Image (cartoon, rainbow, N blue to C red; front, top):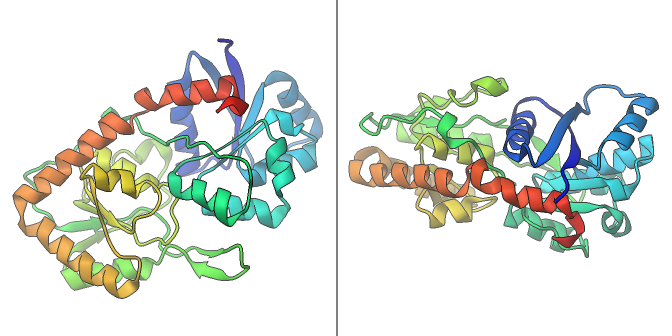
Length: 312
């Protein structure tokens, strides 16, 4: 196995920066991984240097299209990984088509739901392998299992209008449902966004239940980070929720708004009042994050993928 050199080309603030900085650590010493922030301007000579130095430039579908058309990077040197449906939609909006996708060195997605969206809804004929996102679980502060359940947390944008493939704009995050659930159950609400990478392991300190209401989540990252703290999640069955639900680390809420509030209220009350039920869910969350979502166990899949992206 040869030691590959890759360049992650992403917007580096919080989530994307954290994911790829941790992945780079997990890949070492088998893969050399560096970073370029696409929020910064680059000249052609800088990208010429990237082209010469790295085996692959790893980005999104939009990023692959951008680097190919703006800086003349050969598609055979580009790997596009979709972290959510929006990654695919953004690429399609810019002009990514099936021919371009098939010309890339490699493609991937972070969950089964994003895989189905790319292969079915977007109509791409290429198979998108799943490359799971993880955490270094030991870095996260563990919730005291004897602490009263008082607070619902969510650390994503509560309102993020996004355009779908049909051109319509949707309220994907549906933060109003989280606020309504908090009010109906009498819980406190912890909500902080824009935390720096170094602080993300500690922002869950006052959270007892992680909740999200998004109709479209590739992961979501908050679910995995909360699990690493021993905090169960409630939310719609999208992204990696099926895995977390099967592991007993999370609980499904209906996608429709009325059902979301009704079932959410029931689950919050049970988690709040049934200590045995909560402790089991908390332990399941910790076990799932440590066993199935720690970078130490996930890194090898990426190492094999970068060795030969087309073979996966």
